[in-house]
Length: 371
Ligand SMILES: Cc1cc2nc3c(=O)[nH]c(=O)nc-3n(C[C@H](O)[C@H](O)[C@H](O)COP(=O)(O)O)c2cc1C
Image (cartoon, rainbow, N blue to C red; front, side):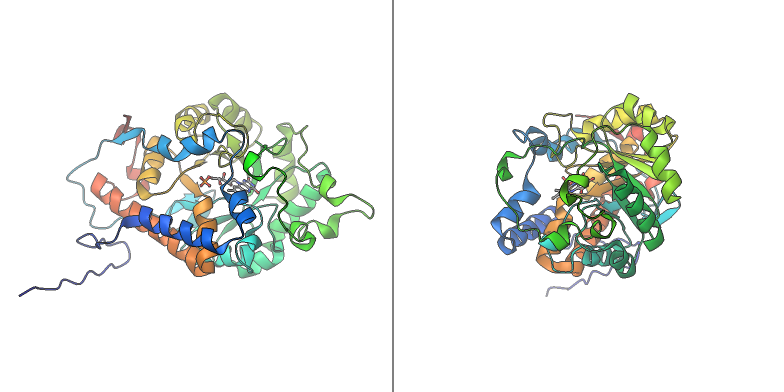
């Protein structure tokens, strides 16, 4: 006679055994394939592309596997609490949705579906300047906290208007992306025109453009940006400003000294300068430069709870996830986004327990070593 054991997971409690499934990696692979089938070829390529020879893109995921764990034992891990506090924003897990352009290419509800799905998973979302829904609609749809990602545009008044509106719509921080003085050249999509309707491309900008301005030029990144932009955007928005796209400790220190409330270690998903050091390898240097003064987040190739575990043990406060959220959005809308973030959180909960850490702050640098 076979006995059937039903697995039940209460909040924070772990199932006693593996669910027999293929785990979060196979769920992500499945969602990726469903997105590939659902999306027009040029949109798929736009989401997947990296710059140059795609060396950085290709190394991002593998770089997290260069670390090995040194688990603790005899810890009470009967409950694992993933709650994460970032600049006064409280989230249920350290997984954050990375800012990405044009979610309406993946799903008709665009960013409104993303913030709803992420909020339902208890996660923070960072909404891109290039969002395809208005900040007001996104703020109204949000079921959880969100931050606004700003580019400093050639028409600086545009950026200032956007951060003011984002604050009024409910954003709790500004994330200033600094690795994009010019947009990286992506061979995979060079010369390919993606049908982004003007009302989606300019949805948050149209109302601020002075008559006669060439909208797309005014909205290009300003390549003359310097650190004083950090203080300026904090003043205009009344919000903390987190700087995204830093790969060196000395540059991170410069940002903190200019008033940054946080730093995101990022290669922009391998879409800016090709052959930069992978985020996983840049993280320790940035943490040293920051010296605990402000939170440090990291993104690029995070695809499992173990990747996040390595990042948190090295000292990151949270991890951003990019493409997997777009795959989930394309394949399953808001529910798909909720599921992928929930799946990643459950995977992290499991590996943290097995590593002997009941909370993110129980992880530390001694728990990870280079392979
Ligand atoms: C299609 C796409 C669009 C993106 N758009 C933006 C953006 O508008 N602003 C920004 O700061 N980063 C943008 N990024 C970079 C992401 O925020 C993030 O750094 C990166 O995707 C993380 O890597 P991952 O996709 O491997 O998780 C974009 C990335 C992708 C894939």
